[in-house]
Length: 319
Ligand SMILES: Nc1ncnc2c1ncn2[C@@H]1O[C@H](COP(=O)(O)OP(=O)(O)O)[C@@H](O)[C@H]1O
Ligand SMILES: C[C@@](O)(CCOP(=O)(O)O)CC(=O)O
Ligand SMILES: [Mg+2]
Image (spheres, rainbow, N blue to C red):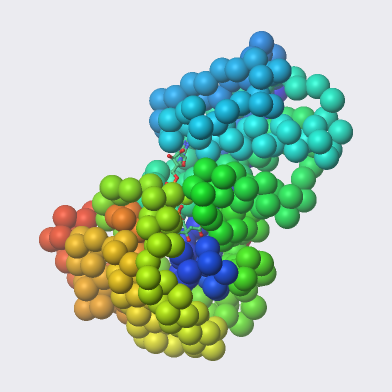
């Protein structure tokens, strides 16, 4: 019998990078899904990553000590999640034997575009494996395990992506903790129409971008400014003001050198034909989130002129 797991992705509305250093962030789960299909009756542990055309096989007895550093970036997140999940189930949940399985993963989330594809495949892997062994995990167990995967692979990470994707809805992260966003703010955000624009291929991985930002000499001063923006967001109920705050956050991220010419052109278009926007996720290319006004057609025309056509409207989703 095949067991299926579906996991959302996320957009970070405010606070990416700053949140890695303990500042706040606001993120929401969106309805782009990763699917995990797992079944038994196999000789080995077989992992099929359909979107990346990768298949990996390993004898069950070797997974516990697998050295992830030997593998290509495309395999690292799912293999690390597989290893950590099996070790956790053995150490803390009474799993006594590693029955082989085949896990197939495929996703609607564009890879390395700032929408949390890494966190979504990691959470999918953990939940698929725990389901296969008939062991249920609490949300915080999944969140912390997935966070340790991202942190161990990237060197630095926050709990934002894995908490948002596991809990779904809209999440506030602060000083490494997470909580569901207060209702009156999430009700306001639910009235907002966001357009996600997949602007361009990233030239650097999240890991490189996070390290680059962490080395910036003005990091603290700039992160404090992002913290001030988030405090304003929490008390704001105007879409016009929210759009301006998104642009302000983007302008600060630009100072870290993680925006690109094309991302900035999209932000300029968002100021003219929408309430505003900002890059979302690690940057270095990838995606922009725009708070729509009414002239969506005009905006799409302008984006086409910039050579950007990969767009999808999204609303917060409660999985
Ligand atoms: N559909 C997928 N199948 C397998 N692995 C994936 C998939 N999508 C993402 N990944 C993993 O996540 C990595 C991208 O993570 P990251 O650079 O953080 O991008 P993102 O901004 O999407 O989270 C990929 O190199 C790969 O290891
Ligand atoms: C840059 C950061 O704040 C978000 C990374 O998002 P993504 O992997 O680019 O989707 C890192 C983190 O919070 O772990
Ligand atoms: Mg990621």
